[in-house]
Image 1: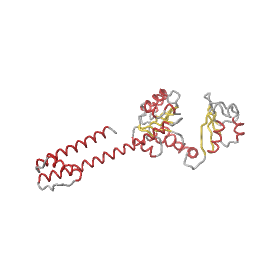
Image 2: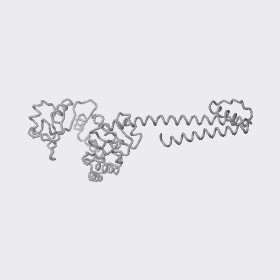
Image 3: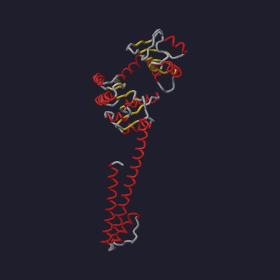
Image 4: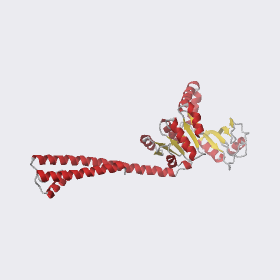
Length: 331
């Protein structure tokens, strides 16, 4: 129970004891009852709101009314306290369930900040079926995320302990999408110190902070306003291209086409072979649109004569069933 809950309960008990003392002394003095009868009358009024002695003396009646009204007030506050305790227990159970699920995550992503940008990141990951957990200090943002079926925790992303609770030791990547660049810088520094090999994408509102975030350890830096402006300009200048990209990237079910990045593993059947020959033998309908080599080179629109090596990353376009077949062959 929270400290404020203990304080409220203590105050209610003290108020009830105070009413018993006031009633006992008042009836003993005003109605000339014995101490035992005064205590009995007071407890009866507080518990049943009924005047057992049918008091007719004016000041005694005023005391009866005061005790009845005061007891109603105490009962009301008691019910309010009880409701808060039950809600708190429900929240604790929900937090425990979320924590239990997060503890079982592996190769997941941590989304730091569930505001306008972070909630969109979470939505895309949810649509992709990618395991992730969102962190935010705002209870409303966390509640909204939980209502959508996401894993979310009310934690401060800039605190290393919070990142540990989110399973950073087992995470595949982290997205720093807080509203302030300075906070994203702190998150990036903390995450990089905890996991030197972790893949980190950070948000920047100002372009002059992009280099600072990269120096802090971010692998990629996204500028939402710059991206939004570029997309709007493309809508005007190249609307058909944008429509095609939106169809490919959308998860609304309007198109079966998807774009995936696949890493060539050490045991891949594709390793050491020419791209075109292997894909032809596999009878895969997916199209390799780019190769990002492990040596840092990139090849757009490969001809099929390229030899694929472990560590290369293939950007593939195709239907989901074809991408599934390609994944079995490549990984």
